[in-house]
Image (cartoon, rainbow, N blue to C red; front, side, top):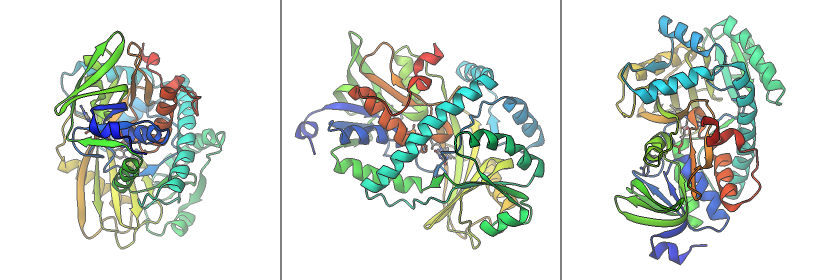
Length: 423
Ligand SMILES: Cc1cc2nc3c(=O)[nH]c(=O)nc-3n(C[C@H](O)[C@H](O)[C@H](O)COP(=O)(O)OP(=O)(O)OC[C@H]3O[C@@H](n4cnc5c(N)ncnc54)[C@H](O)[C@@H]3O)c2cc1C
């Protein structure tokens, strides 16, 4: 139901800052619960990381990036020139702090903790995506075909058995396919591929189509969207946010949600809250379907690159670059994506490139999202730090924020995602 007050005034029950998949999910669930909601977005809906990502709803991706041995493994790959990671050398105390905190989280205790937390949010998110697709008409090339982890190195492929045993205890074990069997389920792979693991619980979609269709559905449910509207700061009084100041005016609301992706820490900083999130730059190339197009999304493990096929096209995406806020397209990294695809696929490229893209993932120091109420501001909520899994965890995040605001019982334990863990 459309609330006339929201159209004619600058007041809404809830104001969401950031029109990525996370802000949109929060707005959607609140609107469904009968709240009047406004999203303010500095560019256009889905202009950030939510546009050109790989589109995996990767519910079996339980291990966090910060795992025991991760630093040594990555240094080794950097020396060999096969690492997707790049840290631009510069004097940046926030990045140095972030890297130290990340390194401190590379231990078994954190791994055990994070795997459980990620399972909880991913499981609920997967179920909520099913409900979402049942309730709304969202044409976005959604398919449930799983994800194939494919290898060129037999030792690395065997080593995945350990992770698979861990996933088994969550009911998410992958099926192993040797050199011959993997080509039967995915004939687009070339002869270098020595086998792989098929995760059947995962699904995929085309993110920019999801953003467009879900935005329409949210509007139909009364969500007001102001594009080209940049949050510049919050007005606060007596432990409450009273208004949001933007380049187009002042907006009031009963509750505010900060879901500005990688840009969130700057606003937190104004409020005196340190949000340990860094922009993790990734790249993708979208093209026509290659002649021998995979039928299943493939994770090219040694290269940390994903290839995602849709009925309407094909995308190669990956790399993780810590180079601050910039949207320059680094041709070398784009070239690396194409080279990586060529190592695994018979025909790695489509005839026509549709888009070369870069986006900033909001990377948290412990590879867990931050979904919480701000400690000293009773009506300000935060949803960021979703890293590599923002699409996969969007519905769970939106639902959790909605339940926190409405005082309802959350669908999973919110504690692992709280800001308190950084205190
Ligand atoms: C190459 C690549 C591949 C990926 N693949 C996957 C995948 O397969 N599966 C998966 O689950 N995840 C994937 N991700 C991660 C996923 O894209 C992100 O985690 C997710 O999009 C983050 O969503 P968000 O809404 O927090 O951020 P964003 O989508 O970046 O949205 C934040 C929005 O806030 C706006 N904003 C910022 N500051 C302000 C302000 N002051 N006022 C108003 N608006 C503001 C921005 O313009 C932006 O639109 C991938 C990411 C990359 C880069």
